[in-house]
View 1 (tube, rainbow, N blue to C red):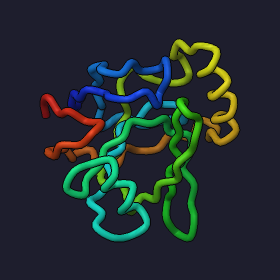
View 2: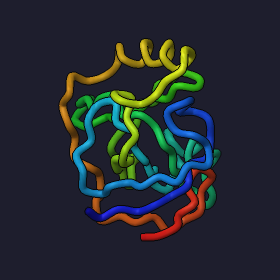
View 3: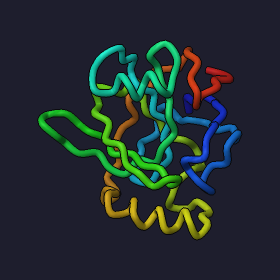
Length: 156
């Protein structure tokens, strides 16, 4: 199983993943709705995601850890709907803006321990979750080599 380790930083996944936790991303595993994913956005110096990418990362790169909710076709392109628990919100990310997306091992809303606030947030997110349709990882050969605010790469 090709994978890489990184350290999660943040509170956006509530009780599901503790800030500072060491996580492993499987670069070849299929991703199901409610799985936690690492999403590496493409370098964006201009375009609709440039402000997001540049605010999260350095040198035009950004990595985020979110919950995959669904994948939908819009105007001929797959758009991945990802969410977070704290605060509960959604982000539609077109495939063209994603450098890589991989499943985080052992982290899913399906079996994660959630407190009352996270359970309320999950109820909101579930309205946007797909019906069990798995998606393939994006760019399984990709190993990040850039610094960003939410990824501290430790090993390829």
